[in-house]
Image: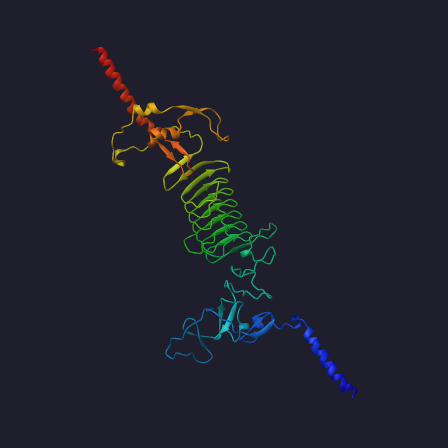
Length: 403
């Protein structure tokens, strides 16, 4: 009788213990989908029926032979021909693939970047770069983020080198490229984020590191030599950058040439067909525009001879000029020193562009930064006409005196 009275008490204690048991007390029975039976997936450590919507890549169609079916155990493959079955369950396939109709296919929901490593779940993450392909799961600084999506640079990391069947060579920690063709990359994080590109030669740490353009023909034939050259360029073709941080201010553009340390615009820009030659960030000695055929020398230019094309066969709409002595008399020569302390502080002589522009606008130009310049050589033709006018006046006065 006493034993019978104890049974309800033991039963109530068991129920109370189950009610207080935490959720994590349930034993895990899986970590990967392959740990579960076919048709199930691993969710929070438990195998469950897999009712998720799926989008597969790599499925074939009906076999297009006389029998329309495959004999024996063979199945219809992607090429519409009968092939040997690849799997019976998901566990027979590689990571990131599922077994469907006895063929291993990629499930792009499970493997978002389709690098063969499934994303995993919140409790069991699998891919350390779920949105950027990182098939080897490289993580040299061991911070949990794969090298392909981690911009941190650790100088203590080991040197990496790789080649590919697409004539690609890369040397350096996190150096690209896994994509494109005929690229040669040397330097830590050089070309690191590239998703396409052909015939690029990138030498220098962190050079061309932010190119992300995926379309073909948008990141080709660039050549760099020096650390951080073209560093922020996101897309562009046929750029040349030689020297530390050369072209590092251009975020998008093609056909540019940067020579020397810090060569390039002083502020972030998007430009094409420009020329810069410099050896410091303070002054660009030579700038140019290939499209306009214009070169600017920011200093003194010494030449033994200077000629200009003037053949009549190269010109049209030729007319006499109507400027002469009257225009010259309105000009006023000045002495001056450059306001830029980095330039020569000796006293110079010349004209002021704004004053000349009011009289002879044809000899004044303006650059992209709004600074004006005078084409002194063009003044020669006006001086010729002025001398002719003055000589005519002189001859007339002499004739009057003789009469």
